[in-house]
Image (tube, rainbow, N blue to C red; front, top):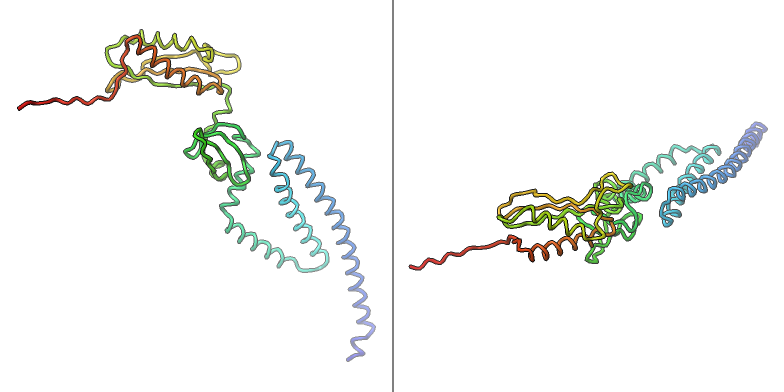
Length: 282
């Protein structure tokens, strides 16, 4: 038995296996060296792409680490295959682990993907005034999984990025100009022409209100006043006033306060809810 084990044929087979393994090991080392260089090159290229896309710097290391881990896993599978080790079991293990992790973290992954999409395509950015998910406020921070906004009454709202990237939102800061739309109610019987004339005078007095079309916008027009509704308690006069986006709230309060004060002084009546009580003496 010992003679068969130590026979020349056995030594020949061991020698061939050792020679083949050494060749594969050398090839694996070369693949490792070349693969390491390629992975470093991919990481550098990926970082340049992120910088050109103006992605938030806080995501650089996170996204680069993900790309690096994926590349190293692929390189490991290739090296294992070169050494003659069966890789199907490793691939199946990685696939099953990936499915399990994906199911467990489906919501988190959706928020992460949403954050990446927001940072890449920039539907809004830090400092923009937006309306989303029933909230209005200024974007204070765009994190990996959430967007943080601050409302006008200093509340902090945290909204998942998955919702922000898949559902509609309003961004009030993308356009240079905004239109202030207001409705004013007046009692029946007043002179409509005088009301419109008085409001136009108020619109013309403010330096913040744009008085006509501008070259850098196709939608900005001169101030407009018109009757829009004959309501139960009076007529509804609508005003449309253009201004810079940064002056929106200043113009909003100016129009409300000035129209109320000046038209009240001119004798125009603003309707209010009234309850008439009739006393019957028996």
